[in-house]
Length: 190
Image (cartoon, one colour):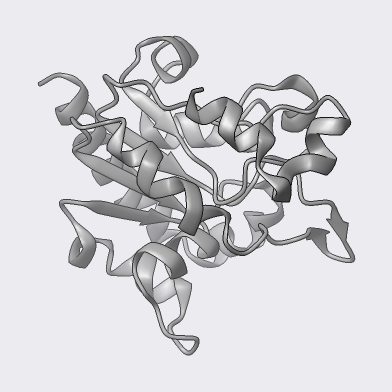
């Protein structure tokens, strides 16, 4: 039995499996870059395609890659903090369920031995992988992205909900995004 089937059969995921939903992730053995975000949104859960929404369009722009490279090159892996849409809250989606990354990420990462960079999208993945303290501000983490290279590149979530943040922090698209594109391009062309 493969990891995909194990995730489906995990008792924590039974409710999703009974609804006919599949875990949303991509872990090609040839991956050089991994995108770790929070969890699929409802549109993505329904389509079964990671980052198949406005956030994904913006993410690909920030990475400087085409849809074809993103989905079909085998160079990019996509592992969310939770493999299923967690549901709606008052101000957006619920957070990813706890324990999912602990249980499955090490095994999935092991399947991709040639990874050179993990792009941490949003606060959930950054807090988990960078072992941030509760008082650490995500804006400061993103501003100081160089501190986490060469292994990690933290970025803000590309959701349209973050347009206000992007307007307040123009340095992100002026300085951070071009550097992200340079790092990604360098890895993909090796």
